[in-house]
Image (cartoon, rainbow, N blue to C red; front, side, top):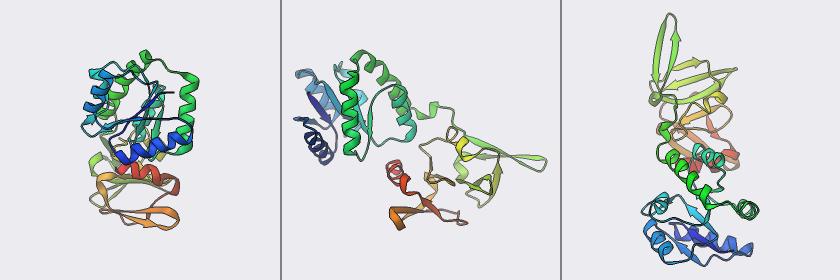
Length: 251
């Protein structure tokens, strides 16, 4: 199998090369930018498989496909958020979430061997995913919540919300002006309503706004403690199983 690695961080590219070697796959060529990749594809026979980082040193890797017709299957390596990952699943393209796990890499390679996806299908899917990644706000995420207070309705902008949390079977909004409001939605229902670029569910009880994070502190059992700008009623702890995704989310 002929494999090409396109990854802007050279240490990550070398690590990926070593991981492939451990499963008896040799990747001799490593490229690090859109420009370098375009030049290489124009002069060389295309590989069977490309392990491709989305964000390269000089732009998004999708720009490669705007300049050359790549005749290879692709497994993406990405640190993008959960919504982007859903796009890959819907379009039947494999992905590896950074930091790359050895078992997940081997599984993805095996899946490629079994499926042998065609380049024609790949080109269509790339454009769909490119739109989702570059224009995530095209999805109708909530821009505001409307709260009933007595006989009045109060509109709260999503940008004014520090966090959502659950307590005693209720779900609450906490705003930057230090106020709580009960809402009808559950945290589970918020999964499809909140922009994952801005909000992350750190545990069973909390969604936090990335722009409201004041500090992140190492906590017991390999967890993290989050300090928000205003909210202080409860400790906000990133659950152990969420730490890896949280670190990728904050970049």
